[in-house]
Length: 120
Image (tube, rainbow, N blue to C red; front, top):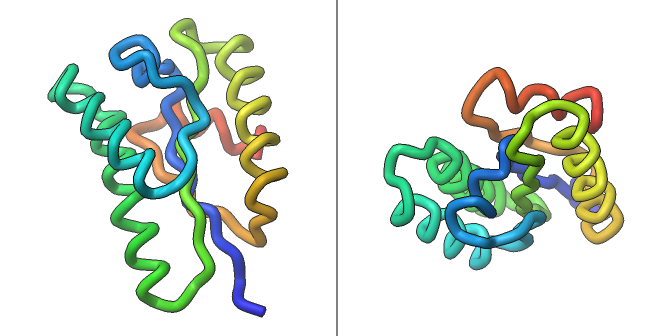
């Protein structure tokens, strides 16, 4: 059986919802592309859109290499801290229950998103 990989993009401050009204988690390639495009059109300066596009690029690369791969974007809360961590944990549990992955490729736009590591 092929290794099942999850490509996981993180938007810890939930810009996705604040700027597009799209709630996390965003599941699957097509929905991640749509959400990323909507976010970049709403705010071309927001790096979370590029993070989501990079996650899709990585998803495509891994799929081309023959891996069984899924993709998701999880979001936190506008006010970073415990509220964001709790929301990330809730969404990550949902994603893991759905995808049953063996490993994870984490895609972030910076240091603050690395808060997700202890949660993973």
